[in-house]
Image (tube, rainbow, N blue to C red):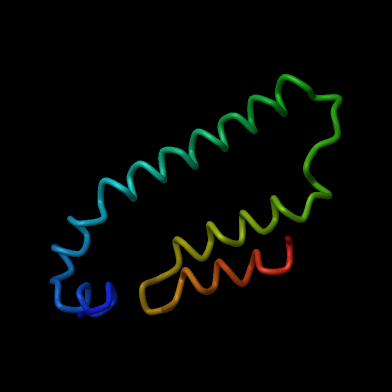
Length: 88
């Protein structure tokens, strides 16, 4: 039996992208919606403490930077997991 990684390695880039495209699109839309809610909360409550001191927002930004990093930089999932590994 092959592992998901082995199965993916036999696919062409177009096949791999086509397989994951809808799921990726859904998750990106969800992330955009979450960030929009955060922006609305900031606007609605300008006197409330902002997230400048919250380490979690910085880690989210770091994770987004990893996501958009070049393909030559492997292991995005592992790198993102490490960013959040000591938060819990």
